[in-house]
Image 1 (cartoon, rainbow, N blue to C red):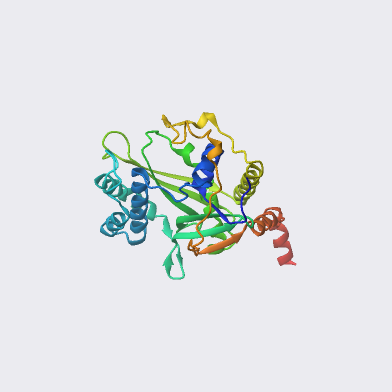
Image 2 (cartoon, rainbow, N blue to C red):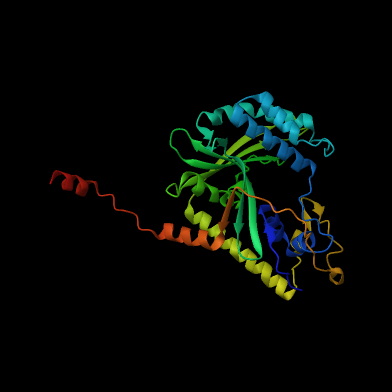
Length: 319
């Protein structure tokens, strides 16, 4: 079985699935009956609503506008015992002091008269694959001018230190491609900033708000881009051999068995997925070509740094 000549969409979530178990990725994304659209769960519904509320507050500094934005993204049909609309609103209201503190040093950039939030981008990898993402916000430090990719997260994890969850995540490295377009290539160093609403224990009404900022550079982004090409090469190799490994260590995640456990070995039922020909083409704010971006980054990384010899400059001026 080989892939037909079509364009397959990759994202942070789909590659995360691939890295957990290739067979799960195949069943979820490639085969007949696969649901390639994201499914909403109580955690994702609360996360989207909370993110919209935080974005609105950072733009307007108005808690009522922020709560309204949260409410418009919330779906009460998808709740559980902890993640409810009341808990989501409480999480947002509890975040106000942290957001006010953040806004003392940072502000959302304005692009063409609009706040730099919810911007979509597409990275064309080759004729068959492209990578997409949506950026929560691009912010700039009021005093230093340093730029940051800003991402809003919510979690029910009870860890005191959540930095291992986010520090090496490639998600914001992909988002940072847009920085060059917005602020110029001379700003080669930037931050990835995570604003995390942690529900905490109990009934969800005792949240903790955590801020994490990790400095990144062109080398970090280049490694992500090359790794993305390696992932696509792996996908093509698996398609050519029609072998998608089952990663047994991932059959149990968060103390729950994989939804495909027990049937993922029924390979005789596998058939190709025919993509809907009437699928609407999505228009993204930014579009890039992987080979061009890699060439650009290699040139910028290997570019010699001018020698800063103050004495020589002073002597030349005096002469």
